[in-house]
Image 1: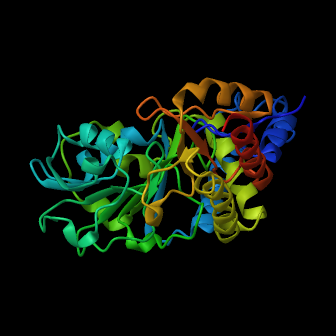
Image 2: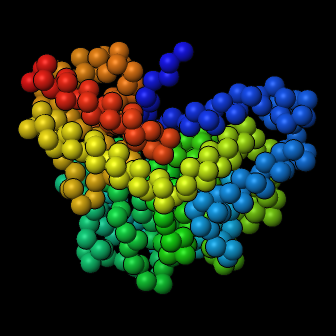
Length: 361
């Protein structure tokens, strides 16, 4: 069977070596006589899987010792509510910078628990840019400042870490984590759903400065308390063990491939291939995002005639290029080129785009 080049935004492609190892270990996990899915999360086999995943993630991302790491059930959206409950006092302001759809989703999750303040937004220009830092109207008494590092739908990405002073910076890194070096110490909290760069859907990670966990936050059930989760090694209840195991394999694969420095180089080359195909098309394809903040992970683009969209998708699928349909919020096309997407896949897409233009231009 020939695997397609999968440009899905998430759940996204996983590295073939990871899938192959999981396949080999599926029925008998390293001599245990059972699958990792069937073994207790309290047993020695899974406890080592969990500990190794944290060690490797710390090494991959460069997480300092004064930061805790949690492995969370579900995706990033849950954390947007939990961060308010854990780190904001009742009625305390929380500053949000909105640069796309997922920044808007974060507003919905936090609104019931904080004095929500939108301190900057690029909604007026269709989320094609990131507001200049000097235009942000920050609140000195805010519990935190929240940003979305990379917007998967609108295709904009922060190119540096904004300075927000003494207020901790919280960031959704779901679609960009481990794709470039990041100075974790510049952030109070980084969180990410795994299903784009770290593994399968159904598990996420929270990287949080330990001193922030000393905040009282707001009344909440124990299951929603980050301190309780940390004390229980992210196993306050039964965790998604299969997802955690696959995350660990994916992180180890990235380390073996050269770590975030190598993936940063690959990401730059892949993004350049794709944007060159768009920008060099003479208007047949277009991407309206400010070039200064274009995403390296998610490239939305539109054909000059939307009547060609269905033909483009059908022929791309026949060529082994799948999951290119744009999100319903924007339409058009979208190519997600996370770490597991090989350069030859992006080259194949760029070649197809040029061939399709020649035949339909």
